[in-house]
Structure formats: C-alpha cells, structure tokens
Amino acid sequence: MPRLRPYAIRGTAASGSPAAPGSTRSAPPRPEDLTTNQLARRQRIIDAGVTLMRSREYEDIQIREVAQAAGLALGTVYRYFASKEHLFAAVFLEWLSTLSRAVEDEPTAGDDNRSRLVDVLFRTIRAFEQQPSFYTLLVMTTRTSDPFVRELREAMRENSERVLATPLVGVSDDDRTVVVMVVGAMLETALGAWLSGVISIEDVYARTARLVDLLRLPD
Image (tube, rainbow, N blue to C red; front, side):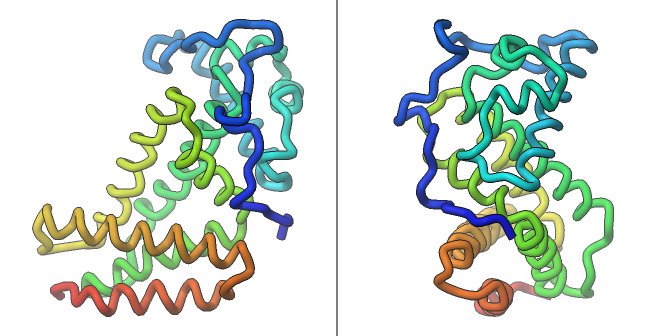
C-alpha cells in the first residue's frame, strides 16, 4: 500500500497551484465542445493520470510527468486542464466512473434493500482498499477552491448518488436522498480514519454494515 497523507495535501488552489508556467489561467474548453480528436487527446491525459495514481501519491506527481506518460507536450495538458487540481479531479471522476460502471454492470447481491446496499458499499470500500491513493483525490476535490473542480464535483456527486441509490427499492425519493447522504458521509469519514491509522479496514466494513442496520430500510 502506498504511504498516504490524506489530510496534508499540497498543490491546492489556496497554496498557489498555477496554470502553465508563465501563462494566465484561463477556462479550458468543455468536453462537449471538443472534436473527436481533441476528446481522445484529453482522455489520453486522464488515462495517464489514472495510471500514475495507481502507484504514486497525488502530491508527488507533477503535471510534466502526466504529459510525458500521455506522450504529449506540457502545454497541451494545460490546454485541456487549467490546473493540477482540475486535471486530477477529472482523473478521480474517471476512476469513480469506472468503479460505478463495474457496480452497475454486476447485479447486487441480496434480496432486500439492506443486503443490496451493503454489497454496493463493500464493493466501494474494496476499491479504495485496493487503490487507497485515490482517496487523496477525493479529499482534494472537496477542499480546493478551483472553480473548474467544483464543476466536476457535481458530476462526482451525481455519479455516487446514482450508484448508492440503485439498490434501494420501494424507498421514496426523499428518503433515498437522505440514505445516500448519510451512508456517503459515513463512508468518507471511515475511509479517512482508516488511512490515518485510527481504525482498521475491518472496522470500516463493520461500521458501514452497522450503519445500514441502524437505518432500518424497508425490505
């Protein structure tokens, strides 16, 4: 497991993460405005970031390394991403989307809401257990003041809510929203405590299951 410092993240907008050296920070084009070739180039950058995050810590990765891994010039990376935070928020969204697709493509185990929700939560925990460095990106996206990250954070929220709500059958929309908020907050807190060495990963699983029990979901 890579050594993480999830609550000590350098390179946020508050600490002065710049755009390309010597340049003025400007809004990059939105994905929906890109051509097919430009989208493919942007995806190469994101894929390179995902690959680097599988074995490195966020704070130790430089944008130049991402550019090299993608086989592109540094300036090209900054054409699509305004900052390191912006790029790695996109990297985290890509990783989260891959996880979500895996959960959605494989039927949840269980014949009731409790069992199905626990199954989805355990799969999510297992993903972070196997690749804990991505938790640092989760923290970064909630703490940075980068406006481009805030836009991606909405997509992350919708992604997570959709996946966590999927196993809930016969639950009203309002109740489903509350359940998703509660279990999501619990999951983030428990994973942070694990990575800080406060609790074990077994505790994360156990406390998550206990929380779902306390929710008393309808069958």
